[in-house]
Image 1 (spheres, protein in one colour):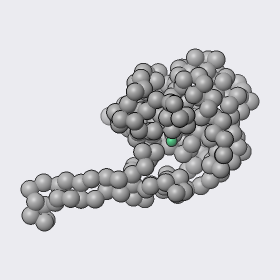
Image 2 (cartoon, protein in one colour):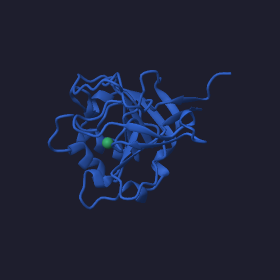
Image 3 (cartoon, protein in one colour):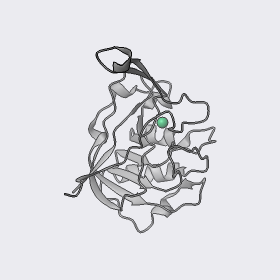
Length: 209
Ligand SMILES: [Zn+2]
Protein backbone atom coordinates (compact mmCIF):
# COMPACT_ATOMS: atom_id res chain seq x y z
CA UNK A 1 0.00 0.00 0.00
CA UNK A 2 1.32 3.42 -0.83
CA UNK A 3 1.63 5.82 2.05
CA UNK A 4 -1.37 8.20 2.08
CA UNK A 5 0.66 11.03 3.55
CA UNK A 6 4.05 12.76 3.41
CA UNK A 7 5.67 13.60 6.72
CA UNK A 8 7.19 17.06 6.26
CA UNK A 9 8.58 17.32 9.81
CA UNK A 10 12.25 16.66 10.50
CA UNK A 11 13.11 14.20 13.26
CA UNK A 12 13.81 16.10 16.48
CA UNK A 13 16.86 15.17 18.53
CA UNK A 14 19.93 16.70 20.16
CA UNK A 15 21.44 16.83 16.64
CA UNK A 16 18.69 19.07 15.25
CA UNK A 17 20.27 22.39 14.26
CA UNK A 18 18.86 25.54 15.90
CA UNK A 19 19.47 29.25 15.33
CA UNK A 20 22.97 30.12 16.64
CA UNK A 21 22.54 30.97 20.33
CA UNK A 22 19.14 29.31 20.67
CA UNK A 23 18.61 26.35 23.04
CA UNK A 24 19.08 22.98 21.35
CA UNK A 25 16.79 20.04 22.04
CA UNK A 26 17.74 17.91 25.03
CA UNK A 27 15.90 14.83 26.31
CA UNK A 28 16.78 13.38 29.67
CA UNK A 29 15.63 10.00 30.91
CA UNK A 30 14.40 10.28 34.51
CA UNK A 31 13.22 6.69 35.01
CA UNK A 32 14.10 3.53 33.09
CA UNK A 33 13.75 -0.26 33.26
CA UNK A 34 17.48 -1.13 33.51
CA UNK A 35 17.64 1.06 36.64
CA UNK A 36 14.87 -0.96 38.27
CA UNK A 37 12.09 1.47 37.46
CA UNK A 38 8.77 0.06 36.25
CA UNK A 39 8.52 2.48 33.33
CA UNK A 40 10.46 4.70 30.95
CA UNK A 41 10.02 8.39 31.69
CA UNK A 42 11.80 11.38 30.21
CA UNK A 43 11.75 15.15 30.13
CA UNK A 44 12.76 17.60 27.43
CA UNK A 45 14.31 21.02 27.28
CA UNK A 46 14.32 22.90 23.98
CA UNK A 47 13.70 26.10 22.13
CA UNK A 48 10.06 26.12 21.08
CA UNK A 49 11.36 26.91 17.56
CA UNK A 50 12.58 23.34 17.13
CA UNK A 51 12.09 21.38 13.91
CA UNK A 52 8.82 22.05 12.08
CA UNK A 53 7.13 24.74 14.14
CA UNK A 54 4.48 27.44 14.17
CA UNK A 55 5.53 30.96 15.14
CA UNK A 56 3.13 32.99 17.32
CA UNK A 57 2.62 36.74 16.82
CA UNK A 58 4.16 37.52 20.24
CA UNK A 59 7.46 36.23 18.82
CA UNK A 60 7.72 39.29 16.61
CA UNK A 61 5.32 41.78 18.20
CA UNK A 62 5.32 42.86 21.84
CA UNK A 63 1.50 42.96 21.96
CA UNK A 64 0.98 39.87 19.77
CA UNK A 65 -0.92 36.74 20.79
CA UNK A 66 0.78 33.65 22.16
CA UNK A 67 0.42 30.37 20.30
CA UNK A 68 -2.31 28.96 22.60
CA UNK A 69 -4.59 31.87 21.74
CA UNK A 70 -4.36 31.37 17.98
CA UNK A 71 -7.05 29.81 15.83
CA UNK A 72 -6.27 26.30 14.55
CA UNK A 73 -8.02 26.89 11.23
CA UNK A 74 -4.87 27.96 9.33
CA UNK A 75 -3.08 24.76 10.36
CA UNK A 76 -5.62 22.34 8.92
CA UNK A 77 -6.97 22.17 5.38
CA UNK A 78 -6.28 22.48 1.66
CA UNK A 79 -2.70 23.39 0.93
CA UNK A 80 -0.52 24.02 -2.12
CA UNK A 81 3.19 23.24 -2.41
CA UNK A 82 5.09 25.59 -4.73
CA UNK A 83 8.71 25.19 -5.83
CA UNK A 84 10.70 28.43 -6.01
CA UNK A 85 14.18 29.00 -7.38
CA UNK A 86 15.74 32.08 -5.83
CA UNK A 87 19.47 32.72 -5.37
CA UNK A 88 20.76 31.49 -2.00
CA UNK A 89 20.50 34.01 0.81
CA UNK A 90 17.85 36.10 -0.94
CA UNK A 91 14.28 36.93 -0.16
CA UNK A 92 11.68 35.38 -2.45
CA UNK A 93 9.89 38.04 -4.48
CA UNK A 94 6.54 37.79 -6.31
CA UNK A 95 8.59 37.45 -9.54
CA UNK A 96 9.94 34.13 -8.34
CA UNK A 97 6.39 32.78 -8.39
CA UNK A 98 5.70 34.02 -11.88
CA UNK A 99 3.57 31.61 -13.88
CA UNK A 100 2.37 29.79 -10.74
CA UNK A 101 -1.30 30.04 -9.85
CA UNK A 102 -2.19 30.30 -6.16
CA UNK A 103 -5.07 27.87 -5.70
CA UNK A 104 -5.18 27.17 -1.95
CA UNK A 105 -5.39 29.24 1.24
CA UNK A 106 -2.24 27.57 2.62
CA UNK A 107 1.00 27.88 0.67
CA UNK A 108 4.18 25.94 1.39
CA UNK A 109 7.30 27.16 -0.41
CA UNK A 110 9.97 24.64 -1.29
CA UNK A 111 13.28 26.45 -1.73
CA UNK A 112 15.78 23.61 -1.07
CA UNK A 113 18.02 26.28 0.50
CA UNK A 114 18.31 24.63 3.92
CA UNK A 115 18.93 21.03 2.89
CA UNK A 116 19.96 19.37 6.16
CA UNK A 117 17.97 19.93 9.40
CA UNK A 118 21.04 18.70 11.32
CA UNK A 119 23.46 21.18 9.76
CA UNK A 120 22.94 24.90 10.15
CA UNK A 121 23.45 27.10 7.09
CA UNK A 122 22.81 30.84 7.07
CA UNK A 123 22.30 31.43 3.36
CA UNK A 124 18.74 30.18 3.19
CA UNK A 125 15.89 31.89 1.39
CA UNK A 126 13.28 33.99 3.15
CA UNK A 127 10.13 35.88 2.21
CA UNK A 128 9.94 39.42 0.88
CA UNK A 129 7.17 41.64 2.29
CA UNK A 130 5.94 42.06 -1.29
CA UNK A 131 5.43 38.32 -1.61
CA UNK A 132 3.59 38.18 1.72
CA UNK A 133 1.32 40.99 0.53
CA UNK A 134 0.67 39.22 -2.77
CA UNK A 135 -0.23 35.99 -0.94
CA UNK A 136 -2.53 37.92 1.41
CA UNK A 137 -4.30 39.37 -1.64
CA UNK A 138 -4.92 35.79 -2.76
CA UNK A 139 -6.58 35.07 0.61
CA UNK A 140 -3.71 32.93 1.85
CA UNK A 141 -4.00 32.37 5.62
CA UNK A 142 -0.83 30.36 6.20
CA UNK A 143 2.61 30.42 4.61
CA UNK A 144 5.17 27.73 5.29
CA UNK A 145 8.79 27.41 4.29
CA UNK A 146 11.58 24.80 4.32
CA UNK A 147 14.00 27.14 6.11
CA UNK A 148 14.44 28.12 9.79
CA UNK A 149 12.79 31.52 9.29
CA UNK A 150 10.59 33.59 6.99
CA UNK A 151 13.21 36.35 7.45
CA UNK A 152 16.88 36.10 6.50
CA UNK A 153 19.30 34.65 9.09
CA UNK A 154 21.08 37.97 9.67
CA UNK A 155 18.02 40.23 9.36
CA UNK A 156 17.90 42.97 11.99
CA UNK A 157 14.41 44.09 10.94
CA UNK A 158 11.99 41.19 10.70
CA UNK A 159 10.17 42.71 7.74
CA UNK A 160 8.53 39.49 6.51
CA UNK A 161 7.29 38.64 10.01
CA UNK A 162 5.94 42.20 10.31
CA UNK A 163 4.06 41.95 7.01
CA UNK A 164 2.63 38.59 8.09
CA UNK A 165 1.46 40.23 11.33
CA UNK A 166 -0.20 43.01 9.35
CA UNK A 167 -2.31 40.46 7.45
CA UNK A 168 -2.88 38.20 10.49
CA UNK A 169 -1.41 35.20 8.64
CA UNK A 170 0.11 32.14 10.27
CA UNK A 171 3.62 30.80 9.78
CA UNK A 172 5.20 27.37 9.55
CA UNK A 173 8.99 27.15 9.53
CA UNK A 174 11.51 24.32 9.46
CA UNK A 175 9.51 22.11 7.07
CA UNK A 176 11.13 19.31 5.09
CA UNK A 177 9.94 19.55 1.51
CA UNK A 178 12.80 18.12 -0.58
CA UNK A 179 10.75 15.12 -1.73
CA UNK A 180 7.48 16.95 -2.19
CA UNK A 181 6.11 17.56 -5.68
CA UNK A 182 4.23 20.71 -6.55
CA UNK A 183 0.50 20.31 -6.18
CA UNK A 184 -2.33 20.38 -3.72
CA UNK A 185 -2.57 18.40 -0.52
CA UNK A 186 -4.40 18.47 2.80
CA UNK A 187 -2.24 19.93 5.55
CA UNK A 188 -2.35 19.01 9.22
CA UNK A 189 0.14 20.85 11.45
CA UNK A 190 -1.50 21.71 14.78
CA UNK A 191 0.56 23.61 17.36
CA UNK A 192 0.52 22.61 21.03
CA UNK A 193 -1.53 24.70 23.47
CA UNK A 194 1.51 26.17 25.21
CA UNK A 195 0.38 29.17 27.25
CA UNK A 196 2.06 32.45 26.27
CA UNK A 197 4.58 30.60 24.08
CA UNK A 198 6.14 32.38 21.10
CA UNK A 199 6.01 29.19 18.99
CA UNK A 200 5.21 25.51 19.15
CA UNK A 201 6.64 22.44 17.47
CA UNK A 202 4.13 20.82 15.10
CA UNK A 203 3.89 17.45 13.38
CA UNK A 204 3.45 18.76 9.86
CA UNK A 205 1.93 16.26 7.45
CA UNK A 206 0.65 16.50 3.88
CA UNK A 207 -2.19 14.10 3.12
CA UNK A 208 -2.43 13.13 -0.53
CA UNK A 209 -5.68 14.03 -2.25
ZN1 LIG B 1 10.28 30.39 14.47
